[in-house]
Length: 292
Image 1: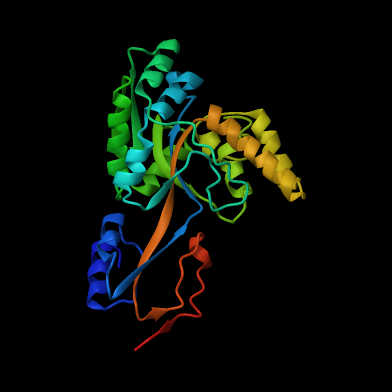
Image 2: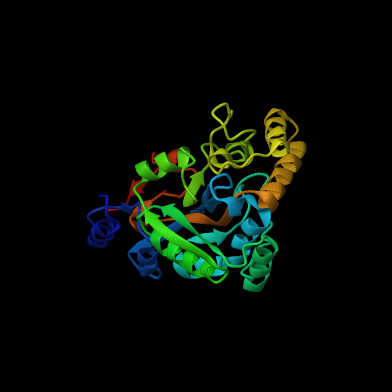
């Protein structure tokens, strides 16, 4: 069943046991239900805005990137648009994972953002295009970010494109801004440090053509540290390196990371032994039973 509304109706009728893909505003309808339970888990996904520092001249200035980070209403996105289905976060290792840096230095501060724009020589603002998915809740988040940054003179034109086209544009480094998510393939910060922190060049010879590279951001220091951490066997030393990488990308990188989604699934109470896990492909359904 592709449509969340179809899943919700089927669950309410007892035609299915678990609804896998409900939206947040649908999930809240089941709070306090006598027949349907909701379970949740932190995830290893990161939602972010990417700024192409090579294609958009203004984004090459760290002060402009900071201005964007200070313009965003993080609490409004998490508390209102996500309806409890996310945790605020600004570093690329999520809270549920080893070596998470629990720092959120950016909060909505329009005056600070305007001051940074003035210092960078962009007090009159500029226009950019932001690509994102048409699937909910991305259009609502995009509209919110557009409204937020308009107060500091940045005019965002939102372009909704299907995933295949979005990633074709993104991988070609042909975007101005992108609103997207990234998820870890395995439960280790290496799976996130490489895409967010490793990029030695913006050319075809780049070793890892992932998120930093796609936003045409290079940083030899963090690239060295990513490689060092991957080879380090001491857990405490690895944690220290990963927190340092996160701090640098938080301060200087081409991203405005704003939340970690929470995975919430609804099931009939007759389902026993089901639990939600951070990695979507590690579900073990062998212990589930159905009470008749």
